[in-house]
Length: 237
Image (cartoon, rainbow, N blue to C red; front, top):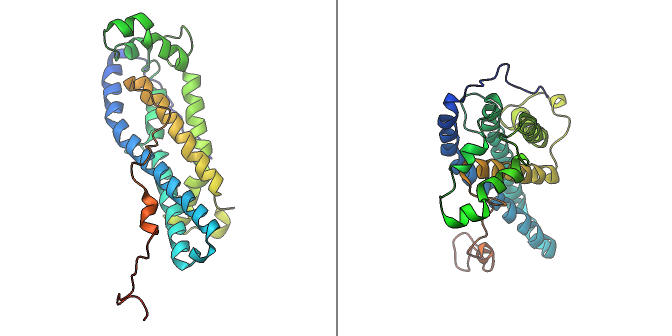
């Protein structure tokens, strides 16, 4: 895979505040996309447990659900790792951060915290920036951004290729050496989630360990009763 990197860097601090506001507008949509992706993963693996316990559910319908899940998940991962200039993707945000050295800095991060006694007493802003960017670092280092960008590319590469060569386009068979495995898809999701949470913290001061939202209802309840009840025109007598 050819890694796209900035050919020049904008070291002017004049646009930093505007750029951070720009990326903050992207974050809620990215968070929602990743959260829904992780929610779909939960349902998929719960269904595998149901099938393991009751092999009778293995059918064309079950295969259809699994196939649709992996296609949808792959496309969503591909979108989050999209490298085009005209998209709001996680990859694009990291690329632009790399393109503007120093745009993520201690001063800008500290300004996000309220001027309250607890915040001052515990020095929350500096403590958080120390944990993420390194103690006494004034800016998020270029090498750290490059590492995150490279990791995002590495975990999404096979899925990215799968979407480009098999889903969006029907490339010759030899151009796709093998399909992504389920554990690779899961690993890509976990990595995307972790990287997002890191930059969300730096840009908004909102700490979270994951975008995954625990369900407040029991989605499995729909499986407790047959969907096609006796007497339905869709059910044989």
